[in-house]
Length: 491
Image 1 (spheres, rainbow, N blue to C red):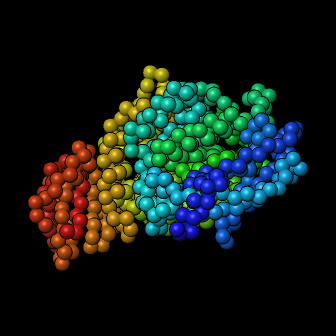
Image 2 (tube, helix red, strand yellow):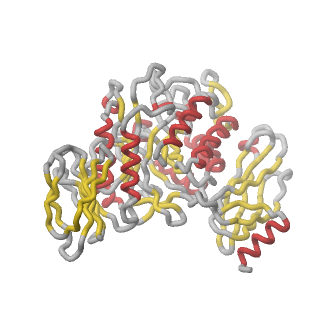
Image 3 (spheres, one colour):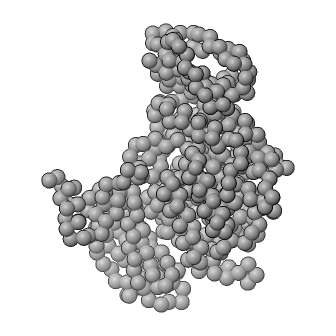
């Protein structure tokens, strides 16, 4: 019997606590009654595995209950020590067993091969995101419909706000819960969190986890009629610490500092304080980004793990990734839809083209949908159903991504007027021709190897394999219509 088997046998024999690797280990504690339990009492824990030590803050969860959540990264026995400033919550020690992960549990998403993403266990992650900012702030039936739609589609990341959103007729409903005690009229008590609000948010993060979807959680945004975006630095830090204590142990969480941060008129020095707050409060070290409006954040800052940009102009994608040596996700390149705003009436064809263009230029894209609806239920804001033609084609595109080499995949061209090419030298070549309608394509392959050639119709979702092998410079016939690609793989 090896050591881990013995530990597991020991665990099941004496019924020690357990959590799977990259799962959630939770400690629940009872505390005394106090005037303000969110700030009067603190609890924390020190978790140890061999020479690894993690410090985790707890949080108040209502009804005189405090919780500490931790995501263990190593299998085997862990020990912990609980500390508190309350005599009623005495320091104590404990232990638990970290068991192997279940098959669908690959850990957090992290940076892989400099410009790409992968899970903790090494499995590649190819982001095809979508956007439904305020979906958790709707009635339960609509929330269930959103989750059902996500279950049926390929999207593996969703951008969503912690705070409710106000944007005219498209999203102006009152949320089912407010984040703080108090009211809009009398003022919000920012040091007294509404536990029901955060439990509701947490439940939706768990629902996404069960669907293997990353929750790209937007911490601040400017589209606010309630005043939630107006907190002081100290109030916002308290909010961040509470949120991270609740959600930081879930492996599917990403932190997006803000949506259109520059519209909020906060100086960079203030955003830096918030990023450092996250760094200190999150022992699980989740991915971190910030999203621009018209301005531009300094993405070279060490706390930025990847670029989350907004622009319909895609030609600088390769330049950005090579300037910052980080992955680039264009999370808002304009949405598929038909509303009377330039940011929300993209055709499905153009949406799919932009996914392919971003990918073959070395980046990634995110989807959103804004079709006119009789009840103003637009996916981009409230979730619900999808009506556009791009999602199934994005699923087809996602499969092409997953069939590419896992490492050393780089874009070739930076010029806008050339076919986009993504390749792994001598092994794999993917050429994308966008909205051109050429009758043939000339490609250059190594002379000393044989390649399988496939013509891909990215709109009609077909792959046509040619009936012989190719080498060197060749001319491939195309059907003289847009949205074509050619894939060459070494035989």
